[in-house]
Length: 374
Ligand code: PLP
Picture 1: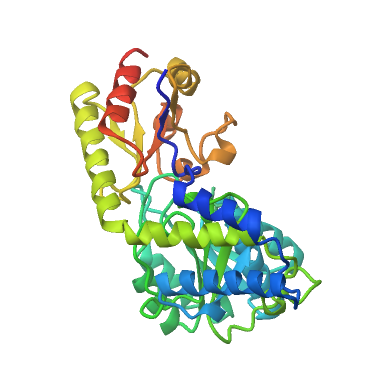
Picture 2: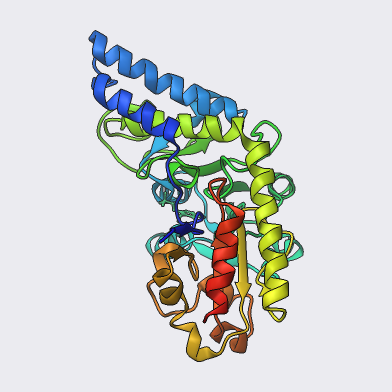
């Protein structure tokens, strides 16, 4: 049975070039980058070249890139240190963020007695910018944390616009860019954002590694204490093979961006066209002009079929999801869709279909065929 993987917002397959690079490093470059002997120096050189390469792809400086174990760690670190060390007394975020931001904000609210304000979300899942500006009129040291591309709906936030608004209000701006890094060009010289985060496994790199962009002179302090790695900002021996694999994955992604983007955008349009033919009553959850890799659809099936739909597709070798991967095993409706849909629509099956350049038209056909048999 052919496997059809349409869950690329959860994680992606590693590119062959990345596996090759990582294998080479695991085999030959086992030195500790902090050691002063030649093996250590060779490892350090790979580490710093990886950092430079990542920085170059995002038009940042190498010193602004700090390696972490994942996107979740980077989000936790930034939010926590902003409160603990940068005197942030209020976080403005939205209820459609990833739990790595939402739950962190809730914990900080309890621990530090800070204020959390949620920006209104429109029925199409967009952030209400007028409400954000209203919230920003309060005088209080604030961090705005709003994600770039929503992992469930693919809605895109205008980072540059929000960055300017934050700048005008003398407010720190953090964006969870886990879903967009490697999939769209990001120029950190023109986007006024203080902190962004990335996770390699979302752009065909390895799991268990990510990075944070921390704008120069931000004053952020470490979450972990120990060695002097990452200029003291992230103690712990660097996972060299993971980091080099991540740098390679990002580089290959940006080198092929236009071709892969066109290919994926065509697949998404083709899927929408097929759904219109086979399930004319389907609806798109979120902005129909959302990010090219994600399509979240509400299917006109009965409530009874909702619970079984993923299982049924899985039996046919098709991997999609109902929300973010961390909650797809749960029967609770997605917290993102809960902010957008009516109670009635929330009971119906919504599917998140997310593409990569490895997908083909045949994958879409197989998905449609499988849905027709439900
Ligand atoms: N933020 C978003 C938007 C995500 O989609 C994910 C992944 O599920 C994360 C954060 C967490 O990233 P990681 O798996 O690297 O911890």
